[in-house]
Image (cartoon, rainbow, N blue to C red):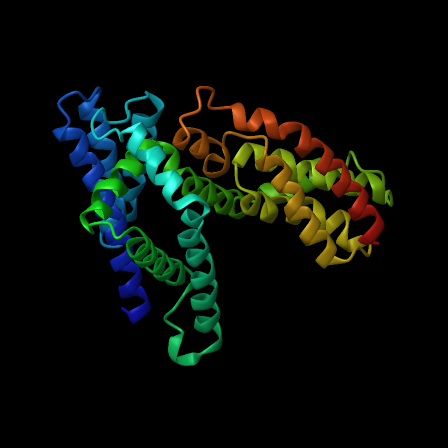
Length: 313
């Protein structure tokens, strides 16, 4: 096992420990509802992260099925304990203001720097994109501790509380990313290409642009992940009906991906953008964010079609 793989295992194990602590939190909470199923979900998830590389793949597959069942029967609920005092939260928010976004900026910038160094410096080839993001997270964590002067024990306390608050939607991006890879490997793009060939008149570039952009948005709505949709729809529509007709692949790729983001604004499947913020802000209607974004998404989708038609050819 290479150093890069060992480092990745360390980070995955740390993530798994956080999930295990969330499960333990549910077990210890005397007022928790559905304690058994909630704890089981987090313990099984922790197992997949900690031992996923060391057990047969069918066991991990079985764990995924168990996670889906527990989530499907609504057996995972938030713990009743450790609810932060609203007054204290308000005081801290007023104290730091917009400075609270500094750690997020540190996370993004340091991750980019680490990933760039990993690809440019041979001695740092172990710094893969995953490891770069994890190292960026450590930099952000150190920044938070320096800013707040908080006791390091709150790393565990607030980390588990936040994960508990987000709930099962916290792992949805991973599931959707895996789904996109599965769809591409299964040849879904080829099937889509055959179906679309009956819709797009030969040589009609405007309709080809419209179908590609709309398909990107719709497939992103279904999958909740623009990158997952991009691989499938570009193989099925973008390449045979646009690029093969002389469209600039750079323009098609750039506008195609952002056309998919129009779908991201309209779907609860994009939990990290639309559902998690509503949960963290404790909005009464968890779809309120999506409802406010739909008109903007539709306008932007039309603009994408026009821009692709004008600049891709």
